[in-house]
Image 1 (tube, rainbow, N blue to C red):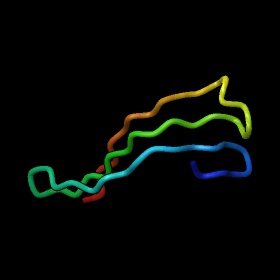
Image 2: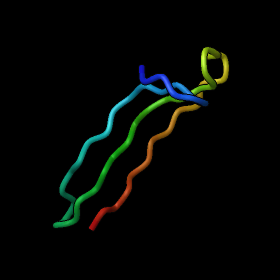
Image 3: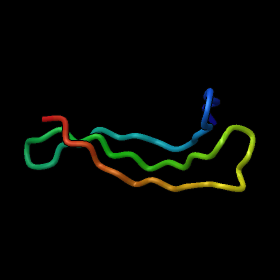
Image 4: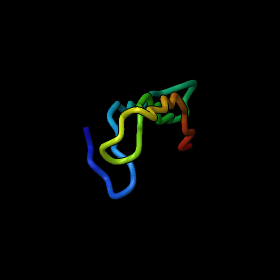
Length: 49
């Protein structure tokens, strides 16, 4: 878990090669500080190049 000022989160990021492009793939959950009742899951890819 990574504690933050507003949200805590835990998960992972990976950098992968997709047809010659760098892609940052995120798979994590986050929730308000000390309140895991409101967990949100995020699975998103960010294309870097």
